[in-house]
Length: 274
Length: 301
Image 1: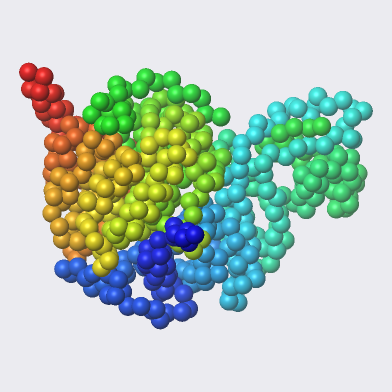
Image 2: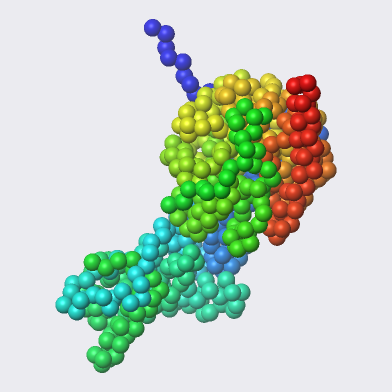
């Protein structure tokens, strides 16, 4: 029986692999060309074969850098142009894009900065800032859901209140940082002077409301309360978790919790209760 | 969920073999114009979207598209099909593309004759192919597979390119013409790309135009570009230059007029300016349609 003919076009496959490797070559640590461009490409009237493929080589990094700058303006501003470009180049070498869309290009950037990037000034801050900025992308892309109306909690019967669980919208992320990441991100976006860059615990909710991504600064108690609710805990249990962080009179605690819950609901953090 | 399209589709054109309608003169739907398009509802014949901006996402762009698709015909133009790659086709991507096309009732879908990466990597560029028999067989096979999956014809756009492969055994226009015939697919004829590549590779753009099977052309692209002296980059910036209008005019002499779209993607001006530039095509289109009517009349006589 004759052998089945391979449907892989071998010459085309070899050429595409060479061409791709050649585009990536200036952006990797392995700089030596496997085969000279002139072996596969014709020169033009004005450009050599190597100069012609150079157009693709520069376009590759320009395009991906532009995309990363758009997704991580805070990291870009803090790192500066040259360092940002080096970080992105290192990131893309370790985490090449395998998706048809550019949207997920930066999904591992925060983790890369935290664990894999060369150590340098403020790398931990850059990693956390990247985490905030990436989550803004995630929230932007998240499925839409209708939020509970502002007075929805009032409809819960008093006897069921303690057992009630709130269901968060999909476009909500809770983040905690060792730096003032939200303040830094805001300052960069508003082109204002940066706040102090030293360590300072901070908490933020990133959420989407009416198709716009917002960020809300939280204190530790608000963060704990919201995190408990988002984990699916009952209202009673979430209040217990948060209460552990309060130092002061009970009445003040109650007021803080009521005020926090009111702002969570009015900002549309929840889509249902059960 | 996107509501069914309620606007009336333009009359079906008999002059392209797929029966796709002649939508008139459209512009690309771009983020910077979302607000204006929703509020002012400008008198544009149709819009083209970059497919990938609206699949795999649930954010504002999809909501905007829902509103736009209720009022205007919306054609889908992709950049990630990678029809020439030797990697397997991405059926998950195609599934999402098909679903979106059904939801917005896209009159047709298009992508480029190119590849975007190999070995499971994506370079996010429209990379050039060698014009060989082997490559032609490969692309024909894949176009047929895609069309079977999508259950509709695919329109492929001629690329702009900056290199020529030594192994190419035929000119690009012959490759495009044979591909269209053998895969039975439609063509999106980008006249700016013809001009850009003709400058970069030193051939006559009108020879390219004359060799294309115009009954398979369902749409035109017009755009500006950036001339660096030694080469031209297809940057989709600025106005359409006179030489490109001449290529368009020559092609219209063959086709008698088709849906025409202006792309403007760098330093994008106001919507009105983009639309105004697109409407410059009207003079050529009307002349071509008059010519086609006269020719039809003469044939009947």
